[in-house]
Image (tube, rainbow over all chains, first blue to last red):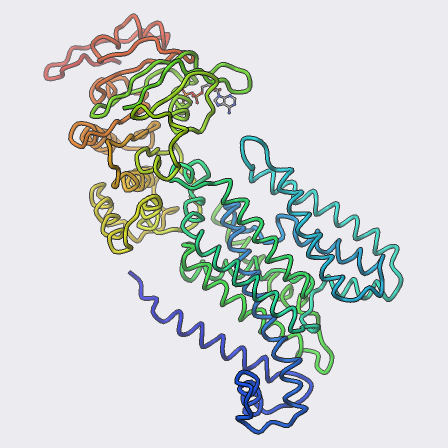
Length: 338
Length: 254
Ligand SMILES: Nc1ncnc2c1ncn2[C@@H]1O[C@H](COP(=O)(O)OP(=O)(O)OP(=O)(O)O)[C@@H](O)[C@H]1O
Ligand SMILES: [Mg+2]
């Protein structure tokens, strides 16, 4: 057996470092030690270290929620990606494949363009509901009395995404300048608007899906043998598929509602993890969660510092990093297929 | 063990199996024979509940198959797939460990069981190899190890369904796998059902030969009574040469 004892300690250390880095980064210079004290104060509700009140305020209300949201969303997207890739038995599947992101984008666009000024929560809520509905439609389209076909699921996902894209196009055409800017920014994804409510929701979703996914990890492994083979091993394949798709829709839906569309985390992270520790979901899922948290938090640090004092949408950063990696993966896959 | 009574299966309104009656006993190797498209795989699939029956019923130990809980059935009935398409780079021992899914074992016991099955199929040296890089025959043996793992907690004689298990194997491996099937039936009281194309292998390893033609059983029984020149000519439209070789119990067919 290969020695993997180093893996958890090193990846957790990495997580803590990323967390501190993210808390130190921002337009207001706060020294690392002061930031650290501020986090301690926040966690213990005590005045353990000396921190200026305005600095404590920035840490409490801006940097901590932002860091935690990046991490929970990153962990959620990465695990949902891993599960979708397992479910579709295709390493190039991403969590948006079941239509949840495109549906959420349409929901958000409707709220932004048709109901301007209805508040940002309504955008998040509209996105979440529309993402869930779209997933259920895609799922219905792909199901028949004899089960749910993965190929049909994929094709209906593509078709519904195209339809949602057309809807967004139409809304873009109708939008005024203000709504247009909001819409464009939303679609690029950003963690800048992080608030504690979103952190709580996204953390709850993360705990739920992590727990359920981990419980399904053996069944997911079996599913990679093929659906018939998994059934012969005693897996309730159709129940499992519904459960996993529904949980992904919830996880991705809440993430998209909180941050807009952030691409490539769900696609790339499980891939990197598979290259390091292999495809066994029992290890793949937890490690993907931690790595997803690290990568999205780092991307957000990049988004804040690359063009400081201004900011890039984090979706742009993940795409700039993720797309070249994806092409690299495709090329590798191609060589193996030929 | 398994009783198939008046079973008919249609796929897209086309009758694929018509009024099949068959008893599959434990402790014996039942060989399914017949030309391409005769319905052999479909008969196996109706035993593993992959196709729905149009009429008739199948019982395992006098209990209808569909009454079984999936996990409970999985402990007693396992299927070796004709082609296993696993493209994710699992290690060989991880593939075999998938057979632990229906079992209740501690992870240490599970690992021991996996090692046992690996050595039973002479796969120990491949334990850490990546499955997709194996040859077709090696993959087949790994799948067989996985399927045998699945049956290790059976409380009653287990059923093993093999669809053309020898199609990817070299001569020695073919005989090794079929001897193992025979050993499982005769010494461990398994009910083995195996689809074969080679009539000589069938007569050498099969206890009960079942010949299917266009969805119907034309003949069944031991090789001596079923593999007659007339039946072969009728079913396969081929006139075999029959050689009575010294040292062989059954005549050889070419
Ligand atoms: N899903 C399907 N749709 C339509 N026809 C089918 C389907 N599955 C099987 N059949 C038909 O049922 C018949 C029996 O098929 P089956 O696979 O059982 O044959 P087989 O005896 O296993 O043949 P082979 O020796 O080639 O494996 C064939 O005529 C086949 O075309
Ligand atoms: Mg067949």
